[in-house]
Amino acid sequence: MPFAITVNLPDNSYEIAIAPNSLQELGGKMQALSVGKKVLLVSNPEVFALYGETAISSLTAAGFQVFHCILPAGEEYKTLASIETIYDAALANRLERSSTMVALGGGVIGDMTGFAAATWLRGINFVQVPTSLLAMVDASIGGKTGVNHPQGKNLIGAFYQPLLVLIDPLVLQTLPPREFRAGMAEVIKYGVIWDKDLFAQMEAVERLDEMSYLDAAFLQEIIVRSCQSKADVVSKDEKEAGLRAILNYGHTIAHAVESLTGYTQVIHGEAVGIGMVAASKIALMMQLWDGPSDQRQLKLIEKAGLPVKLPSGLDIEAILDSLQTDKKVKAGKVRFILPTQIGEVTITDKVTPDIIRVVLAQML
View 1 (cartoon, helix red, strand yellow):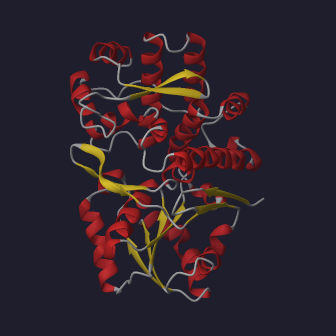
View 2: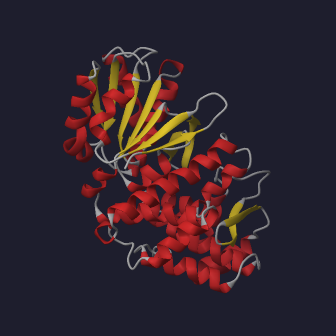
């Protein structure tokens, strides 16, 4: 059953279109946007082998002239060097201001393609076609684009909204189980920060660690509800002046863990799972929420097959140092998003290094 969610923004509102088999309709959807005929499709080898032909056929049938740029898969390639590869393809194929870059892939491809589109010719059209659960429910929506700096995650980037987000849940059938679990971390996040009914629905199912345990209707439900949560928040605060920061729940510690392990040991959703456990324990120590709520979240994270302990060999002081490069630091103070009850969080800069040390020591 098709769903359409609108991200309402003052200047750049757009649709999130969710429907099985919608990848075949990409060309028609883009035709309706009245964009130029040149399209640069950016993907990675695995996704392109699976879905590149379908996307290109749909675009070509709709009258588009399609070129492609294939980047290596993995967070460690989310660099300025990869952006230069996209620029080279844009130049070689003479992309114009009316041209469009289409991101076909997970969050890494989406972030990089969006940043390249934001900066090529000072901004060309951009369409998101996410192929991982994490990208569908989170990374493809809201216009955060960018790459990592060797000393911190997503430090280089721009807010740049897509013209369309096209989600075909059927492509998740080829998603590796580890990547599915990583996406579930972001779904759990929405349950904690915004949607207590979604949280309760996830508690009611037996398993969340593999897609085969979820029926198609429930899978679509969690995608739709997560996208609606993100659209609601982004519509209220496009550039993260206040409320939108709650979408970073679990990400403060997560980004430090990813950065310190070189983006190779722990994937993003796993780090977010660890980060949510840490945020919950910090909230418990600061008496912002209660033990039963902490346990409910912990059980859900474990049910999704996500790690709840820090990777071995991580130094607590190194994590504290890394937090200082976080984008949410304000006047030298790290701002944490902490839960107050299921469905509600608060933003605070009152978390002391000693509290963080105690919690991280518990998680080693």
